[in-house]
Length: 272
Image 1 (cartoon, rainbow, N blue to C red):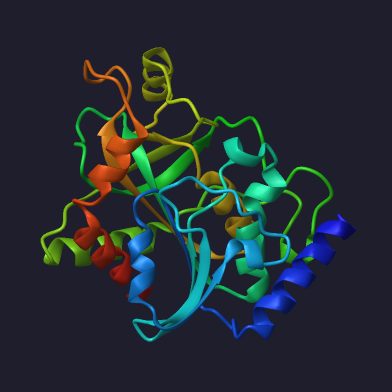
Image 2 (cartoon, rainbow, N blue to C red):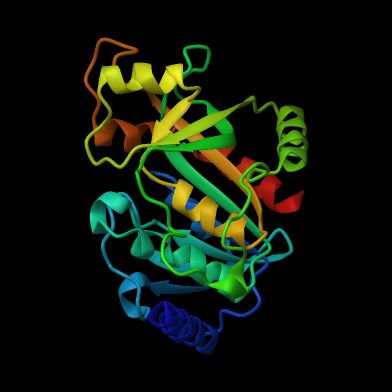
């Protein structure tokens, strides 16, 4: 654990030396949603492979860079792409960027992802606020010795996704004609898409959407007491809902159709 502390110190010192100072809001951009980073003003952009202790591994639709700038009157740090557990098979590596943002001092984390739609009452192409999550990865980023300076050994997860912020965000989005669904996000490890039987199980245990990310970041930020807003882009109906195979290209292409609404909802999530 001292090694993790040293890595955090080395990484945060490097980022501060490059001008990343006192961020108020952190944003993690999911598959197909990376263009939001272009909204930052006076942005400092640093590729992951230049940052100490970051891995350069990323899926093709992610830019793989950290950006810091101002937007909506806030100092914002943005991860344009994330590390998936299926890429590195190490939860410490997966959660490390979230730990770095917490160590730099963010007070709010906006987590985004592309997800498969499990709830038949929702539709592909819709945005969903995450009200809760189910972790089916079999791992937790807090396993191992605890970093007491970042939070308690046994953090409560009851209020991980702030209900008041969700209500306010949904109300403001409705004024702008954006209908936000709300539901439970379930994390599988991937990289294979879920089977129809797994989707039936996920629906049975209360999931509205499924994906391969986001939960590790939420656990880290929740332990540290950050406000968390989770936004899923329901890019496709999950396996077995429709009689058709799933592809990664479908997810990326679908995200292009929602870019404007997505950007506006994230803007509102920063403002509230």
